[in-house]
Image (cartoon, rainbow, N blue to C red; front, side, top):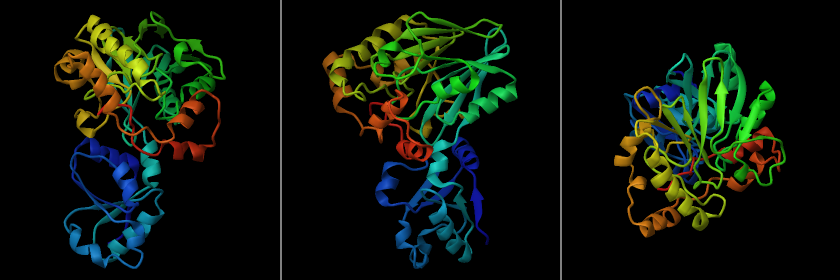
Length: 375
């Protein structure tokens, strides 16, 4: 048998299609426990590379003989070496091209639907980080919301669609990943929008994104309406697009709600979070389709690979929207929190323009799962 590479895009297809796959992860145990390739029908085995340097004989009995085995490591090299040993033993083996670093950076567009007057709405799914970003297209213009730092995917897609990106927006100052919004605006000559209450200390110019702002995209009058919705951050702002879609940023997810502590203000912002979820969103049409900026588990993916659900369904099924007692709500969102995202303070400083790490450091800062939700 010969060892074959598997591209992150191929692995993404398997995850979305809920295919079976056996993954041998040869990173250290702590790295594997912290963050791994997620798939609802994936099986896992974790054996550190250093335990396999002298051969794979000791694990052969634990590996399937009738399934393709994908070997995964941090950057690729270790998985190639282990994969070659397994292939020499006659197993059907692939390795993840580029390793977990490449998996973390893979982005793929999913069409949400055509909009009322001829526009289109796309969700860009970053499976390795659980990040979701959006592009609205109308006429010859486009707007991008919550862009990731890999801006080429957006510019290439815009070129393919023959549109110009005139607006980029962040729903809030991100702390779990580096925003590509400002860089994308500079590349395209567009306007970068940011909530001013999240912009204290930023070192660059931006257009203030405030409650009631209407941003028009293209000739077909697709309106993006800003709705101030604090709680994850003090400036968190949601968008209602085309009267049909509610982009909630990191305030509301499909299976959870946003955490209020990434700027160290959990006790101060918890009431803002409750007001947004239990009052401001309640005033909106419950037929709006919620499109969040993150998801937590692959179970939240729909069959087409998108992450979306009706607001009315979330008010029935999302536990974070059904905690009647305020004291219990406060306890839930201040005490029931996962660890802080890796390098979250440095990521915030990068997104404020206070530091400018090189591309390799940016990759290292983002390694790991997203941790924006209350458990």
